[in-house]
Image 1: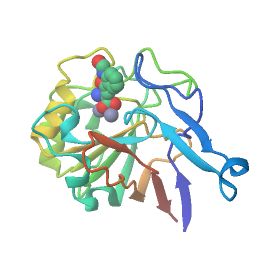
Image 2: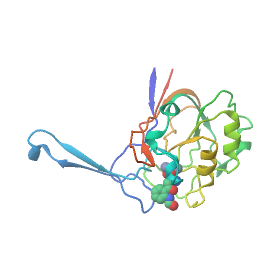
Image 3: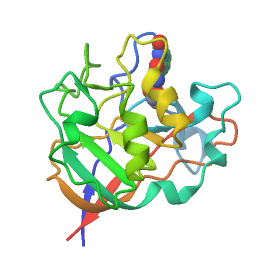
Length: 206
Ligand SMILES: N[C@@H](CC(=O)c1ccccc1NC=O)C(=O)O
Ligand SMILES: [Zn+2]
Ligand SMILES: [Zn+2]
């Protein structure tokens, strides 16, 4: 079985939301000092690189990341390419088969330079969540930092997806992935109080 890594590398200088905590790793207690080991420390925003959102991210009463069922993040997933669009709604799926799909990963190719935070991205329109829910989708993954426009404060797509019990995986790297069916593994860390978690997202296929 081939493993395809669809995670963005965590490293100094990686793109983050404007004004948000930059990613920082430091060997906080070097071997020379501790006498036996290098001990690292990481500082970062939860919404950096490839990560999942918990409902608590946009709803004070929403569930935290460690409360979400793990089976959302492991299992069959379909990668669909919908590139060259500024937004995606139900009409964009007229030629797309979503039969039996629970995990849908959208390859929008709208985050062109991986070294910079994008200025605009392809977002999900407000009428998409109900359409996806009727198809049986439980997890949506995107290759951009958000399912909403970057300047959105209402977060219509985040709230709409949540209302329809569709969970959100953001910041995937799908440029090198052929559309089709795979097994997805993208497990969040058990961060008990958190609004989301970074994930190592992979696809397994033949
Ligand atoms: N909803 C976005 C995050 C987001 O909107 C955000 C993340 C960090 C700092 C500010 C943000 N939004 C500001 O308006 C996400 O889920 O990744
Ligand atoms: Zn997020
Ligand atoms: Zn989000």
